[in-house]
Length: 300
Image (cartoon, rainbow, N blue to C red; front, side):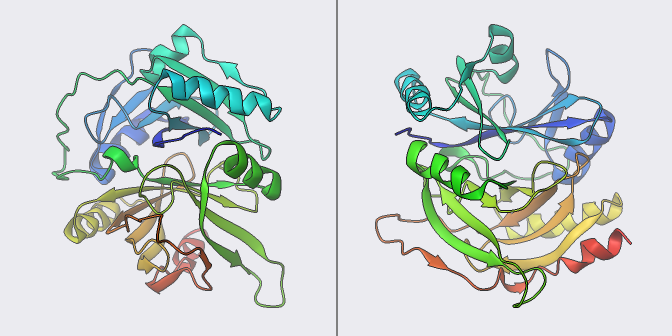
């Protein structure tokens, strides 16, 4: 079984790189620079990048990067995937250079999402200095945040991540968008080998952008408030009001990214001791707030 240590990066595609640069710098508070092989690197800590944005003919989510600790961990993950019948393609030297890693292995999960397993990041350890004064993003040993991905082949995708890639089930939510008498859409929250409550969630429905949302975390509630002000000042569509989740206790709001998926900007995520954690099903998404109808109103 693989030993995934954390969410390393995500890759997005955009028809307007300038719009992404402005959003990253002026709203999210990340550093942006041109990537050596084209596109943008968005920096939120000492790594070369955490979000790579490539130019394309659509606005969409492209890939999720998962980190292992070593070359041996990389070989073990590739072996586990191939033993499970998953096609794995080793990244070319050019692609490894683009991702700033020693090796890369790409695969597509049963729901059609692309993933990249990597090890050995290159970094000049350049200091992170937010252009709008964000003190720091919470990354390090618990990864850059989390992603929620569509999983239309839900059970098969769950089996791949839990039985082959070594993820554990943190908790579950059974979404009923049409009310109690309507269909149930599962959203399951998974952790890898770190203390973040979830690095991945799988949602049993299709999403046009290829991603439900990406979550990034800052170190204070004041940073969340300032980000809300910047969102309003730059007329970024808001997807949800401020609220606090029941499961990971994050206080956050949601807004639309230039690639069509949401970004959850939050503070206060629980770091879990998995030896004592009890998996449960929660029946509401938030303790308070998180009115997602605001995003639907904005589309009308």
